[in-house]
Image (cartoon, rainbow, N blue to C red; front, side):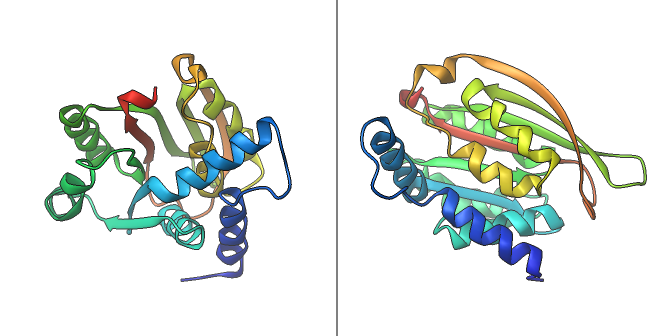
Length: 199
């Protein structure tokens, strides 16, 4: 269901992938990258979980194509991913359970693609606390500070929009942060797979 919070998050996600106006120099390259991400990003979400619904709405409002699955990835794989990955420059991200994330990571190797970012988002206790364990390029993971104050699904779009054609992707770090998230419904995994030539 589209709530007021989801709507506001969607607007923010759209702006996260929209070029910044009237900037030159390094910002111009950043703007070009942001447009390229929106054009080539494919997002996979598990429709059974509320954070995935938030992410899906955000991505759609930003012009990103969204694929909804449950625990089984085979139908999406045969219908779309196989063909998509045969095209150049496709970047695939997701917020799913561990099974689909593992499958996508293994399948990607056959297309000269690799997993460069992975996050585990695990509910802790009964009060809505969530522990986020992230591993990936410094330029991405350092953006996770926003998890503490906003829906982490919204922050994922910003993390995935970090510049990808840079040497920074070779510097991998791990970071753990906690937030308060209502209605998680279970442990989720976020991930990003890119063509090897980009990194």
